[in-house]
Length: 68
View 1 (tube, rainbow, N blue to C red):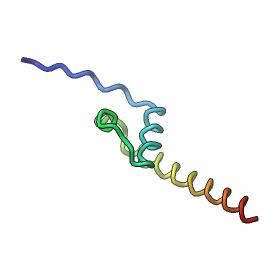
View 2 (cartoon, rainbow, N blue to C red):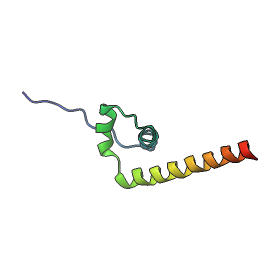
View 3 (cartoon, helix red, strand yellow):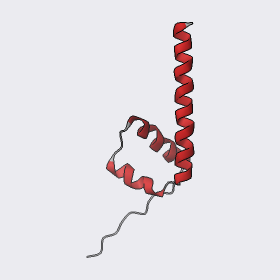
């Protein structure tokens, strides 16, 4: 028997952002995790760093709004 696999969807900016967003929470479905193999690792690293920086900025803004 020959198993046919679905071709992996072409990586897109939205898929990249979705992967990084859910990774921040540590929640991923196995199917999504397996499809992330087609994403460019350099793009993932860049998106992760940008996401972390945005998270820190949001935290700083919230703390300053509450304290000051």
